Image (tube, rainbow, N blue to C red):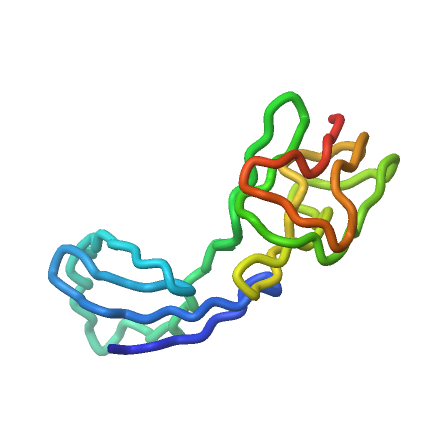
Length: 142
């Protein structure tokens, strides 16, 4: 079993590759197991001596932070935890994907980001307060 540690957008991830097969892999991310489908890449073109070598390009890793749900401008907790820090208060403008608060869950700090650009209209939580999955965190007006 191979194990990796990643830090993406300030969040830490422990990834264990448990099993690999030609069509899928079984991986564990922070204790949660996932089945990952593997797509076969097209065969690499044959290089001749005259083809210049290009440096490898690092893959872009999309943020794997928790996904927030939003309806009627209300952003809800994607998982249970404790509010560690409120970054933006009511009346403050935020851009898309800007952190609004930090939620600690499973001993990890998760930034809860604005799903749209707008103004924080209402905050439903306080620092140190507990939330459950689906609890209202804040309301944002476009």
